[in-house]
Image 1 (cartoon, rainbow, N blue to C red):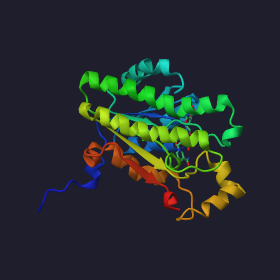
Image 2: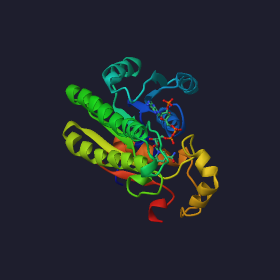
Image 3: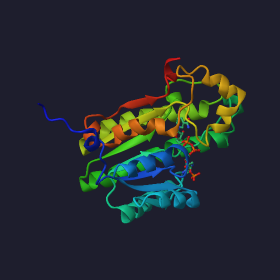
Image 4: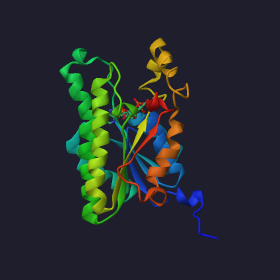
Amino acid sequence: MAQVTPAQRLFDLSGEVALVTGASSGLGRRFAQVLAAHGAKVVAAARRSERLAALAEEHPAILPLVLDVTDTASFPAALEEAERLAGSLSLLLNNAGIASGRRILDTPEEEWRAVQQANVDSVWHLSRAFAARLAGAKRPGAIINIASLVAERVGVSSAAYAVSKAAVLHMTKAQALEWARHGIRVNAICPGYIHSEMTDAYLASPAGQEMIRRIPQRRAGDPSDLDGALLLLAAPRASGFMTGASVFVDGGHSLA
Ligand SMILES: NC(=O)c1ccc[n+]([C@@H]2O[C@H](COP(=O)([O-])OP(=O)(O)OC[C@H]3O[C@@H](n4cnc5c(N)ncnc54)[C@H](OP(=O)(O)O)[C@@H]3O)[C@@H](O)[C@H]2O)c1
């Protein structure tokens, strides 16, 4: 009988230390909970400190860190602080992001810049700082970038956001190519519509309900629908030979 690693061990994250951005709500909050439940130490980062404190109360392995991902100059100190809190980082989850819901001609310059800063510049700079740190110490690791269904398909009234997520997807591939030599795997999750503070008002609206009818599975996702993709990409035993991949979790929306 061939030796088979049991699933519990395959997805065991004991010894992993993760930094999750945008952990104060929605997907990021769930990612922090799932990683901690599987044995990782998790530094949960965002701006709203009271939300982070409440999350940290839930699990002793979740440690809060106030971080604004648009403040790129603060990243080296933030990584230093994350390692002081939790030990040597092995996983970065670039999840923080903001939406924009306007047509191109109606999008003010400040909104375009804000979306690219929060969704693209942040991933570029934080990933660089993280990879430089690991490469310098000759430590392997992984990055998971949260892109989106709209990284590959566009819709009306979400151009600035869709362009930012397309950049994240392309960045994932470029990072994977350059950092494989340092033992750093880089993959993306592309969620479809998932219930969160970002989407709930839209999903409840008549336009949102109409859109849900066009999703092959006829529903929006719950943050827990991403648990499997997250664990797959986070666990070195499960995805040690995966890099540059994008996992779509969208109820079949990208096919419709
Ligand atoms: N929900 C969906 O349907 C869906 C689909 C595809 C992709 N996504 C992506 O998934 C990620 C999470 O979205 P979500 O749905 O969970 O939305 P959400 O509930 O609004 O959460 C967004 C998170 O990002 C953080 N954030 C925003 N700007 C930040 C900044 N400047 N510095 C630090 N943190 C910042 C927020 O924390 P603070 O405000 O406390 O800083 C919050 O924790 C985003 O990248 C989003 O684009 C979501």
